[in-house]
Length: 166
Image (cartoon, rainbow, N blue to C red; front, top):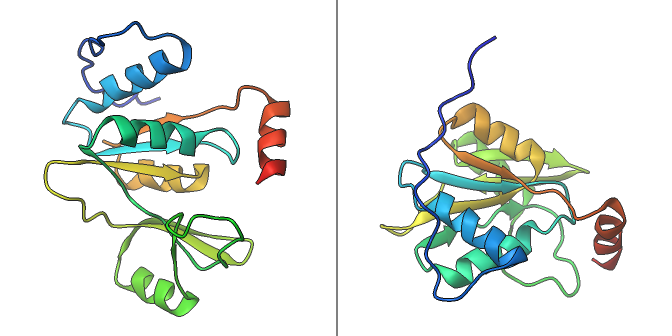
């Protein structure tokens, strides 16, 4: 059995001006991991309804040096969904991008394509990916240096409640 890949060195956690508790402490700890410049891709992953988007949005609000890569999809825009939730495109345009090698990862899910384009982040920013488990496995295979954080739901009941509300 091969040894696990080396983990990036973790510096001390950020020194906040106010005491952090619970969820705030989790976010601060996650941000501390992001400070290591040796990690080119930060990937938050987990099944639907676990809170990936909530965590990513909180990180983006706190740190302008983070840049979220917007996933592409060929599915229809859902009522009430933010216009920038995805880059909505056609299967033809998505397929052309696949042929050009323009995705870090992609998958066909229930007849629609979803994928993370090769990032073109502004200089001096850290790339954040918010993707499902299948995509994270592809990222791990192609970019073993990426930092993957798997998010679990607080409980199965809460996850089901969140998914039913979408």
